Length: 187
Image (cartoon, rainbow, N blue to C red; front, side):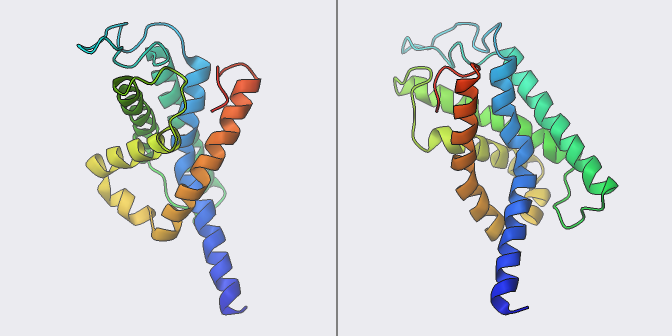
């Protein structure tokens, strides 16, 4: 095996690790769209600027359904890593998957709050913020509560993969969600 082969293998393994790490953060947004509806998190309240705090698209049912789905897929990862000896993949813990899942939707809430302050409407596209809100939210929450896990698992190659694959996966999943009727817009 040459040095180039080793480098390619290293980067491919980093890509797989990035996907493994982020699945508990990627799934909650889609699950929230499926489980959404019901009481809005902001109870229909507006701030002094007259704009809603988050909007009708952010509901308790969607938030908790999304977080639960992220945790469940993380538990499957924990089981699969152990059951199939996938020790080359990063080790998830109950705490890491919970923080990734909750952080993803907290990042989405923070983005919605900022969108309302900027006068953007529900469903209106906001380049980059729409793609990376879940990553920022997840990483900030883990950094605050479980920084050891973050620094052990998010290496530079893994971070590069996350930056590259997140908008691609976000776009594909949103298009699918739009065509199956769980999203109002394909972004």
